[in-house]
Length: 211
Image (tube, rainbow, N blue to C red):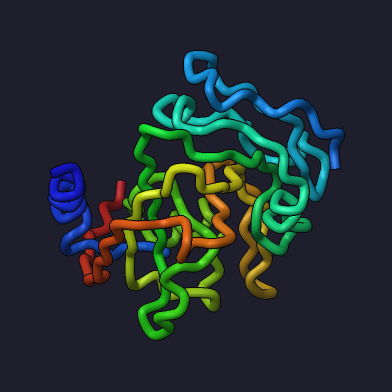
């Protein structure tokens, strides 16, 4: 029933639109059983000073009680990128709690089916202009045309990194700055996701209004 509801919402919001497709000391791990205590962020790993990363590490309210912060320096290091190479600027490793549902979204390349279950996912369905989405999530044009969208549920116990985007250089003429938008790094998407649905992109030309 929930899947049907979500699918209906996606059809209403996405049909006819272009859909879109990216060591600090370790503190104690928060007890997963303590579901009534808000998640406290651990120190994050960054490729540059945290002050140079856009945004903050606070989870959206609707997700803050669905994850437990844990320590996994190796996984965290995989998700962090140097300046201008994309990936994350700062991040925190989490485990999905029991009795919760987390939906993840990924825009990908229809000409490369293997890219459907890549490492980079979003917490919200793509909306608005494609160019702005690329900038928000540092997705260079040569990495993906963003012509397919896949929506999946995250399995209980799955481990992810959630953080803000690192800057990316796409060419001599195009750079994306670091972004405050939260991104999700999922190292084992094929194993950690289920109940997936895919959607095609369609042309939807919106008139430009000149003020």
